[in-house]
Length: 498
Image (cartoon, rainbow, N blue to C red; front, side):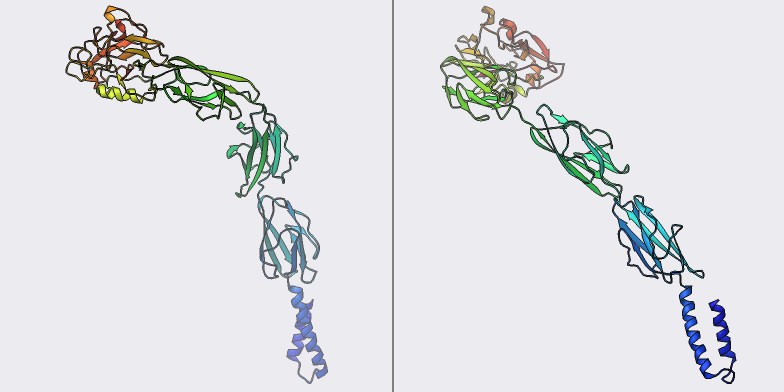
């Protein structure tokens, strides 16, 4: 209608002369034209005058002629409300297809996690404008529940609360954590290990005292939330009265130390008139005494005087709950001139690196007593470097000397003037070792003569060659000459104090 009036007025102005229309009327028509043109312009616009949102903020700031916007909201914002205002108030407005009156709020528009598109269409009757808003709802990195297999968390669980604590009894040495994520697309770890939502974690060990467990939820947009649970495991009086280590400064403990073994023996040369003991408690709360005197765990005792012969030393460990364990060491101090022998803890094939290589193995063996020179009781063949009879070379036994087992101080034999013990004339007093039967390389015959070949003087480990071995549990000639053994098989060494 307004466009028709405008055309009529324009026609009159264009076709009439001043004689057909008075000047006054022309002026009125000119003003009417200006007014009508303005009204027609306003009536035809489909742009919004303003647009507001109840959550987040438009980016860029609203402008009637800007048609695309973005809004970012937190995950907790599950919907958004818009208020559009048209220029004249007479235009129709639809938001996502739903009519909204100018200046009125829309219905709540649900938001999914991630990107959501909202379309606003403004229609003036003669033109249409479309505004597009992209609303991004943050992903959810929260939990809906957090459950421990033992203990109750405090405060009560809430998705927005990230720090918790609980106390468990001393008997609870481990627990599991079951986290459940709010958003199924999120992942979760417990102490850095992945856990399926709603499933229990692997068992988590608890020390006495404070233990911090971290639960990290990672949303699909890589945002994270960290929940922490401080678990305090109560302490009780410890009953652990064991040792984790027991060391002597002279000699070697037999058997090798083990916490559950409480009786040991060691043999001390006559030159050592005293010994120190270093006990280490398995539990730091336990106290230790050596021969009745307090000793700091892991530190050496004062020197304990030794008489020639057998000396009993007691180590008492007292647990926090007053229970005790007593370890006993029988230390045998040898008489002047008595020498020791020991069987190596390790066994070797025939390639010993010669007799000198065998000596080196004696010095590095676990049963080496810590001081003194020990050599292997081992002969090589007639062209070798160590022989017991005839042309004696670097022989390890001394004349008229008593030899004892280093493990317990028991006398094995006393050599004759020829620097051997004559097994053909009678049995030895004791075997070389008190344990189960083992074989050791000797290279000698029953009369102490060297055998031939002998793994090519202990440089071969093939079954094409062999050498003599003795038996550790024998007191007869089998002690030095039991059989021939292939060089690719293994046997121990008998080490003799020099």
